[in-house]
Image (cartoon, rainbow, N blue to C red; front, top):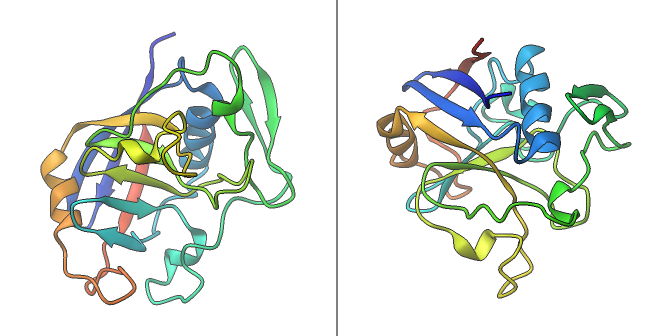
Length: 191
């Protein structure tokens, strides 16, 4: 089965992503499920750091001024289907299993324009939040032991890199939040 793609319409333009549904099925299908349910529609990029990354996916960011932005995720115990692996259940915090801890997980590096799962640093703490790398952040690779950071790549931007950079270059406040909110109008999983 070929990888899924998604169209992401933002207030600064549209970009498209390829989701690594074959290589990183638990993580990529989690994104597909949330996007198909409209979870991401209307949320805002809540953390933007120039020459590093753009973070997105917290349900509290629907209000771009929320102090809780960056702390939320999917509904606890919610389920989604992963072809070939069956139904997956998000844990009591709404997080998914750390796929990168399984033997044979592909070593996909946090290169520019890749999508990577955000987490708290604790096991199985990724849910709906992810970030788009704007530079090569190899120190975030789960297989790079130079830091404790472990962020698995599950997709890449295939069109609209200029939009990613426009988001990354937007003016931010002292908390890395865009001064002028950048909204994800809708995420559509392509056929």
